[in-house]
Length: 156
Image 1 (cartoon, one colour):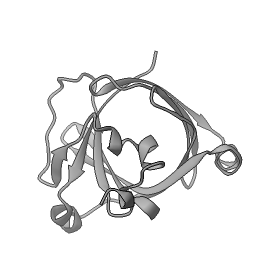
Image 2 (spheres, helix red, strand yellow):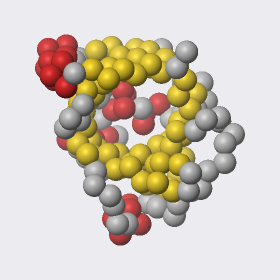
Image 3 (tube, one colour):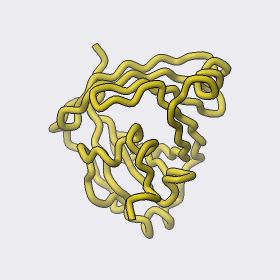
Image 4 (cartoon, one colour):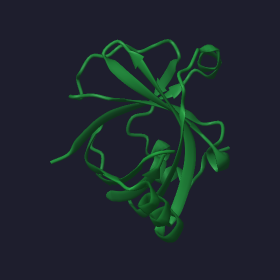
């Protein structure tokens, strides 16, 4: 059974802007199903496609199944079947033994920058760099599947 243990944080925007970043990648992702208890997502990068099924979060843990699919099929699924979609730029930054994935959202979510870290257990220790801000793990409005229906631009 696939399990994802992920903690999510807001960014310190000033420190993030000053940070030397690696090459980042554009992500297009759409949802075939957005339900409070489960989501089915298709993701497209410049070279790869993925189909992901996620269950409900309990703390920082949820069931997750992710499969690489052909890029052309990912494009078709997004174009033909996605009920909602978002785009973002993702930067992956290694800090200690972990990789932080930082998403700068585009479109209706522009201005929102969120960092995620995947862990092997909820109580695993990890280094928090100074460009990380407040933790928002479990705050449903920051779930990507919710950002497609209630985008950041509407929060004000």
